[in-house]
Image (cartoon, rainbow over all chains, first blue to last red; front, side, top):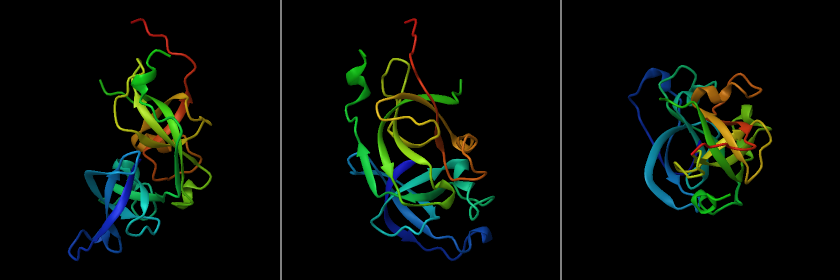
Length: 99
Length: 93
């Protein structure tokens, strides 16, 4: 999964009929300091996320492992809304290569 | 060769109260992927912890739909799961 921030919504009228009822959100990837990166994905919402929220996105075949997305043409799903992050070991792994 | 298990280091926790119902009671951890020489190989990811790993520990994890196999539920939108804690790495190099 990766960390992202919901920055917008996608409306689509003409789409695969399996996707009727899906809520598409635009999610921008975040780094560990919650800075926005340039990558983004369009993900189906399974938890009721809203604009501005920090979320977790599962991608690939795992995103079809919810009751709504099962066997549907979906490859990214929002599966959690983040309350808090705790990065306790911030230094890069290169720094302690001697361990 | 396509690797199926990856090495990483747990660098933090993620709290998420509102999540897909199948994920309730599962622990989410930040993992920094690395190689056998402790060099980071990719951007940090978030993985579900199935073994009780803590920050600072070297672990191995699986990705893609296989990540759901060790979970106690049939279906869950999870694409990375921690499945082991590394005690030592013996590297001939």
